[in-house]
Image (cartoon, rainbow, N blue to C red; front, side):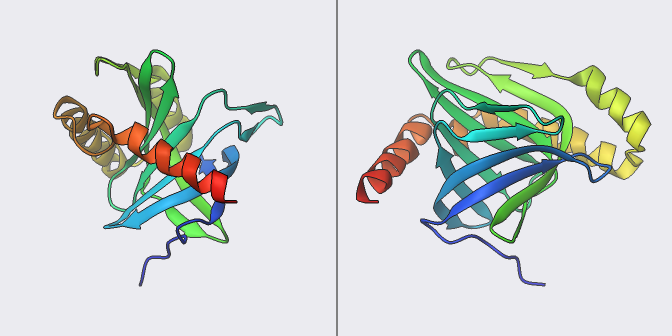
Length: 180
């Protein structure tokens, strides 16, 4: 079956689900900047975010979003005054459906600092949800493999971790906004 992709310049929502199919979080508006080789790159700034419990908030800083159709993680590059921070979600590969990028969030996250040092977050939440929602041994094995792959990508400065990557795409995003 052919994979569906958004179009460059299109504005989409991002929906994060949990393994039990419940909605976890919705980002209202992300502009698609590039689509190639199983990767979708988008960006947003001050976008409305809705939590599963009904709370809402706006993102504070510009973010470049990097989604893979084959890897079990996605990466948010947040541009702050003191550098680019990365928030990496271990998740299912994305699907694109009804103007929405959708994925299952598997709890484990890696927060990466501008110096590329990182912390693995939410290990206990991953363990708890794995039991509560019955993550299969296959899913757990994939998550473990993808966690290693993601760490390798960070340490080798590949993909969204390449020097200047986030700044380059944010610049394209700003130019696109000016043209609107």
